[in-house]
Length: 304
Ligand code: ADP
Image (cartoon, rainbow, N blue to C red; front, side):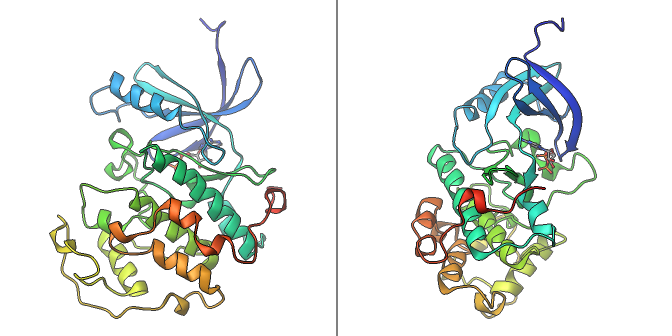
């Protein structure tokens, strides 16, 4: 039974909201991998072929800034994802106060993030759960790769509260917080805007402790949207009327940022999802052409 194994599973290296992650190797090549086992009992109607087919589709999504999904297999009632192994992530970098980084480093990470995102959006896949610890880094080469693309769906919906661990809502777009059932690629751009801000502040920009508080924090930081700038906002299922608050210029919080930086950030943090910048257009923004240049891969902070 164990003689023809393709992969060797080693130790448990982490536990997420809907999965347990192990490190391992591909036996034939000795290449290091991460095996992500989607927890039993989470799959709504058992493990149907549709779920596997959908994830198989993600295997085709190859890009230098997307964590490579090497293989997908089921074992008993689990879904197992075999992923390229990466040893570091952006959350650890942001939190480690011994690591200094520069505006050019942020630009380089933003560019890699948006390139990965753009590739997926062009292939009709959204992420829905972009956050710093889903942005994995190769601590040696400096490459940034987005993890878990297209995997944040019902069978792994963290908001259902598998464990007592509550999924972070700090990167969630306002339309999702207001219960939008139909949403678009714009939800990922909102998250990228929050991450962009966090890279500059080195602390989460909107750190709400409930869905309502999340919207309140956003409104306090940016001011409230008007019906005129976000039409049909009040038709959203969980819309709750709020006291209007004046617009706050981003400059108020980001005193040292360049005008280009704040212009791009503002275009990502637009309330109306239809007016929010796309990944494609963000990559063409003057921010990426103005100085400082994005830091070269080899010059980015390294994982010691
Ligand atoms: P979360 O639900 O918090 O996003 P995940 O389920 O994605 O967490 O992963 C749990 C942990 O497993 C991560 O914190 C990380 O340490 C590790 N991990 C996930 N994917 C990989 C990978 N491709 N390479 C190395 N480690 C990984």
